[in-house]
Length: 198
Image (cartoon, rainbow, N blue to C red; front, side, top):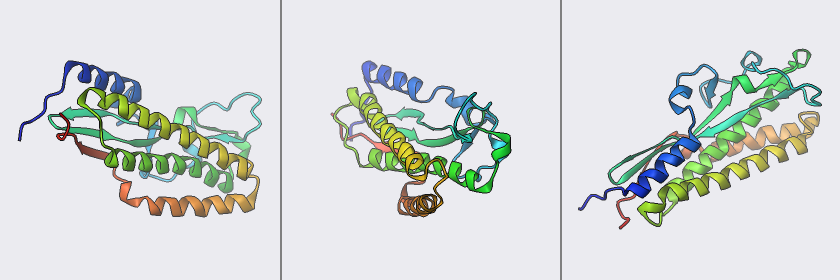
């Protein structure tokens, strides 16, 4: 088998993509400001951010997807990591109920759910060429990120930001079930063979 070599153009695209999608990736792995999904359940003490002035909401969860990429001959290695950002997440002191905390945990769970869907998409995806790998991953990421945001908005709308107890109970069960359904894709690190490309 002939091993493929990455072109300068592809390398530039991958480096650019890596820079855009995983800013501070070396720091985030050990930075106490980040909580990777699955390492612990959220606690109110994790919400270190300053509440937004005049906000009509009682709390805010800031979670994100980070995707560091590396290349080794005919394999692309990608980590898809859902993380909670303490410094950007906040709660108003007199609203620290367990019900609201559960609502915020589900926001984080939605981020992990879409991380799993993104991992599944990457594993099942057939790339077009070496030159377009970075661009194609970026396109897939942007679509998945958009769908994740849409689900976050739908969740808050249907639960009225945790105020609708009946809908909140439905979403609690829904996310529990969706995380079980996507359990096969809970591993953060992926190795994707691209040796089939010319």
